[in-house]
Amino acid sequence: MQNLEQNRIPAAERGFFNLMSLAIIALVALPVGIACLILGFGMGDSPCVMCWSERITMIAISLIALFILRYGLRPGYVAALLLMACWGMFNGFIHYSLDGTFGGYLDIKQGFGLEILGAHTQLWVIVVDFCVIAFLAVIFLCSKNLGEIMNKTLEKIEEDNKDKLEGIFRSIDFNNKNKLGDTKERNAILQNLLEDFSDARLDLRPSMLEGNDIIGDAYEYLIAHFASDAGKKGGEFYTPSEVSTLLAKLVEPKDGDMIYDPTCGSGSLLIKASKEVGSKNFRLYGQEKNGQTHALCKMNMFLHEINDAVIEWGDTIRNPLHLQDNLIKTFDIVVANPPFSLDKWGADFALNDPFMRFSSYALPPKSKGDYAFVVHMIKSLGSNGKMGVVLPHGVLFRGSNEGKIRQKLIEENLLDAVIGLPANLFYGTSIPACILVFKKNRANEDVLFIDASKEFEKGKNQNSLTAQNIDKIVSVYKNRSEIEKYSHLASLSQIKENDYNLNIPRYVDTFEEEEAVDIEATKKEISRLEAELKSIQGKMNEYLAELGL
Image (cartoon, rainbow, N blue to C red; front, top):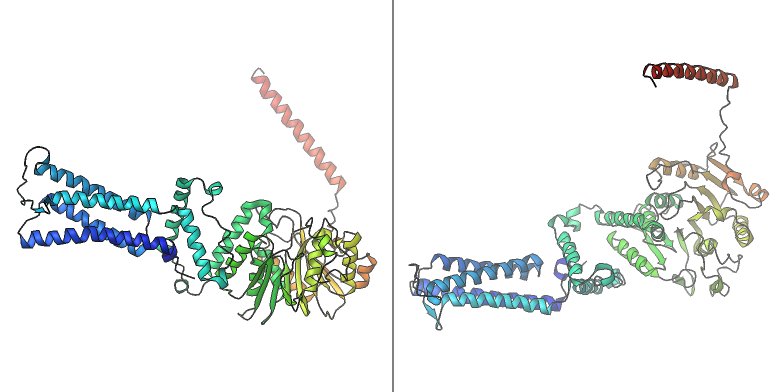
């Protein structure tokens, strides 16, 4: 990535600021330096106290200008320049006044105040400091606001890293009045942002991180935080980390696999899947409809140092962009958390789908696009591929065309497992979801049902899966274990008997019998409590009588 420090201000404006800084140095250092040498060493003029104050001010201005050349035009530097210049002018006016301008020559007996080009050095101090202030005014007049500068800077960074960052920053507008306020307010916000990221403690170069993925993890944390605050909208771009981890472990990606997510959001699910590979030998593919979320995903890949990920921007159903020889490209692993029961998903388009994705299956209903994504994922799955998808429970039992699609998938022996998840795991909805696992070329003819709806850690606003919860689900899935009230291995004939209804309670009985009540013991306890209550009421009446109440 290009050096952000150098690119904070666009090249053209940075050159202008540097030119102004050089002018300030030349204006201050050359005249003052030469004058000091000539007067001090050539003519024996001993500087007075006020002369020293003026010259020190000049030196300070020169040093600040050098800092601007090195680090850029920062608000703190500008403030320091303005302060020094004003202080220098004040000293100059006082000194000039003492030498007789405002009423008689008042020699302070420390030098004789030689003239340069017909004027005393005190006057030249005033002139120089005024010019510095004038230069600052020119800079402010010629410089655009911070929002526009940042927009241009990010565009330059994107341009310089086109293969990795194209399309990421151009959708961000730091000059947006509606979001960030008027110029003054906007500049204040952005100034604080720039100063925070300029802090030396935020040196996040790889050489400083000892190989840890701190930047990527921090970015993931921020996405999760924003998703949590975004409510319902958060679910559109982020799958909770523990759900992504579970799904990644279930599909078991291996070395050399191509991994695909047709509704990739911010890319967290793809990244979790890649971490299960155990090496860098994998390739990630994704497609996202929302432009800003697509930018989030590309940046997520970049910060996780996954530089060869192919992330496309577009509607997966209406315009699939991962193609090979004008056909739907196939992958080793397919994972997704598509939008739940999406309305207007593109049913009209699907009727004439040029890729014939729905020709072998019934067309999903217009108002519920769950199976549209499932069918697309099946068509994107290689001959020995494996896929996992997060869906609402309705896909397990809804009838009509959804029932026909479900039946076809089961008859083709593609469905490997149905896993029920706890409620309130996902952002924007409290309804429980499920995971369906599909495999091509399955050797077994059964479906594993797991009811993990009670396996969670309760949170204030949202429930979560613990590492133990995840490990239990994965272990039962891999071993295809049957555990009472938790999992069941159902044959295809059993599923057929249930009319291809996959509702988990049909296969996993989680009913807990209530403990038998001892009627006689309960009656005795009630009698005892009534007697105790009567005794207490009697004592209360006695106390009240003593008090005259």
